[in-house]
Length: 285
Image 1 (cartoon, rainbow, N blue to C red):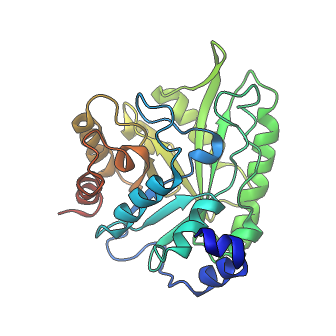
Image 2: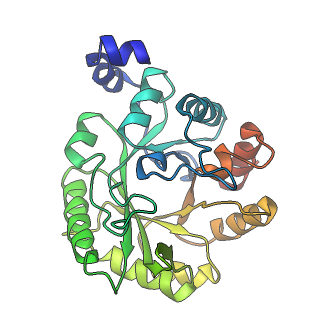
């Protein structure tokens, strides 16, 4: 990778152009996407290790293990991650989802300002990626939210014009003791769904990426857009996390999972086994 980036950067575009693509949805209509766009927002921590994702070679190794497992459909990443995986030949036959807005850096005074600093729709199309993803944090106490909503609406409209599916990850959020906290109550998630669903000139290519919360049945009754579940962190009980995913995956409108650190940095540090468990939940044994 270093040699390609240093001596032949044009090769990156060629590899992306030549990679084997697949339909976004096929077979059983379900998707398991591995998320790896956290580092570009300065979010490197996993559990008690604040720098767990800092070693790029270790992260790529874990991603390659995950992508090699049968039933894993693709990966979500920023341009640097997507390009590294393309150079390594790990994207052939996989769905590649480009992450768009990483400007709200973890822990910054401007964290709520989720401006677009990664892929835009034009660069995503040029790279021949399969879908886009963006974060929509909504604070009723922060005037900067309206800019995020405006830019998100433009991205949704642009993606539909290019016929690129776009995953919207909405949260009702606010500042609590100097940090941004997402409200994971059922009513707040429902409100975020209602707001995100109406963004853009058309929702024809819009999908939702939602956390698993209490009363997910009510959450899914608030939306008609195709939905993938946000894995989040496993916490102290991975078994409980997997059980909550399994229950939510049975709901109408839910088409799979987008999971990152829980599978890439599992408690037992066995990426393959953690990924295989998620595959069994999404695609069946």
